[in-house]
Image 1: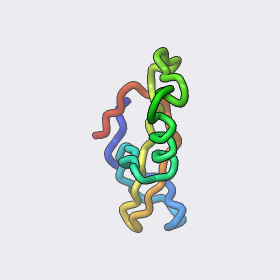
Image 2: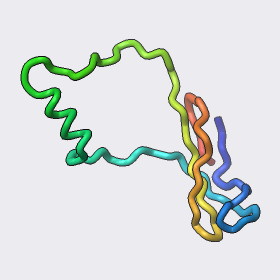
Image 3: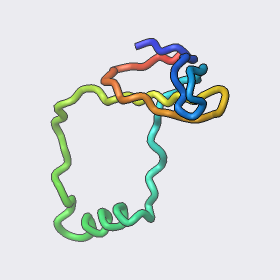
Length: 91
């Protein structure tokens, strides 16, 4: 799906319609020292291996793509709800 680089939409901070720059949301790097990560590593350690079965057959073929909209006036970032797309072209 083709998405323009700039969209005019409502900004909740400015409380009126403004130009927004569009980018794709990408999850950040996972923190190795977070409690969940440490707990998972501990559960995987030693005999017995994985805590839960690794998924081999996936039902979904696409992931939900989330668009990040940044207001050009106040730099407020809002996220558009995820849409199932195989490919997103911004530009």
